[in-house]
Length: 292
Image (cartoon, rainbow, N blue to C red):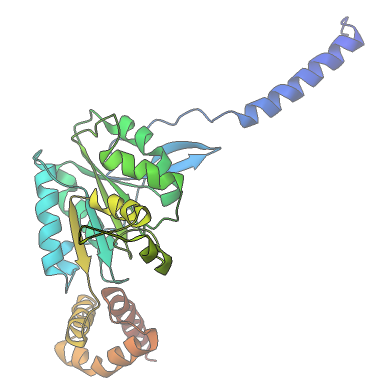
């Protein structure tokens, strides 16, 4: 039987309730990072970011990337320099959708993970946490690529300014074991409007773009290496289809028989790209195996 006054017991109950509510607002205790993993995601919980290991990363072999040999060679050279501890550039991969931009980044992880390369995927909205991510991996022996896929911004976004600063504009220098690889369908990462042409000035015969255009160009220019991707022509598309069909075990005769359907598939999708070719191969082989 408690001898405490009823008023004090009610106070303790209310205090417990208040503490429970306060605890729900506090950040969770940081989880230890699994530094043995090769790939990571930056995830936010209750407004606080954490580095989470990806236990089963999407493995893509560079040898499976057809039609982008020139882009692969440039990307590989830059990444090889980085892994070897030599100077290398941040990379912006731009161009047509489905042509292998993000696959090229994943292929670099597959090729160089054993040499110490690591990949950290960061969503665009979480780029404001870039300084925290950089501080977390600075000083480690591994080489980290911070990867942001399908990047685009609207004017005034905080993540735009964070990325701009971390690339080349902050008082704090970026550690030598970190690079930024980003993909985008836009070269300048931001929408462009006809009204911006009105800001263009002519001074002493020299055409100078307005401040808005300068702001947009300044971000993409901070990437030292630009790699552009283009829509496939028909022959390139069919070559990629043949590669994937062969990887599923189809014979040369079966691949030739699939040619017409491959072209029809691209017409229905309104595009010829590596992604469309991969999707066709999966569908075609699945139907072939089921006897459809």
